[in-house]
Image (cartoon, rainbow, N blue to C red; front, side, top):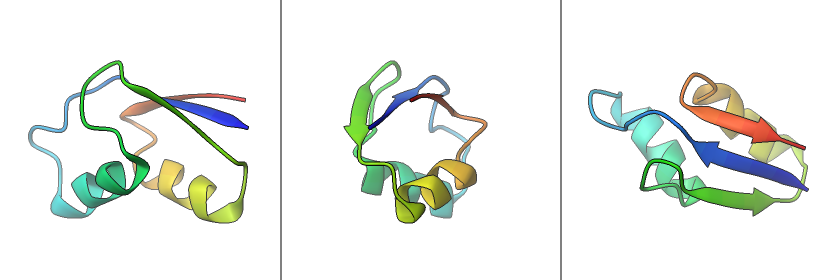
Length: 56
């Protein structure tokens, strides 16, 4: 399992990055979600890596 935490604001980000955050279910700063470790989730993390903290 991977724990993802949003640490930077969505304001001023590109629409694609906002769409990735919506798909991950991250809307508010300091909100955390857990996901299974797979290629799709890893790809989404890569697109917004500057905005999230990842804990395995």
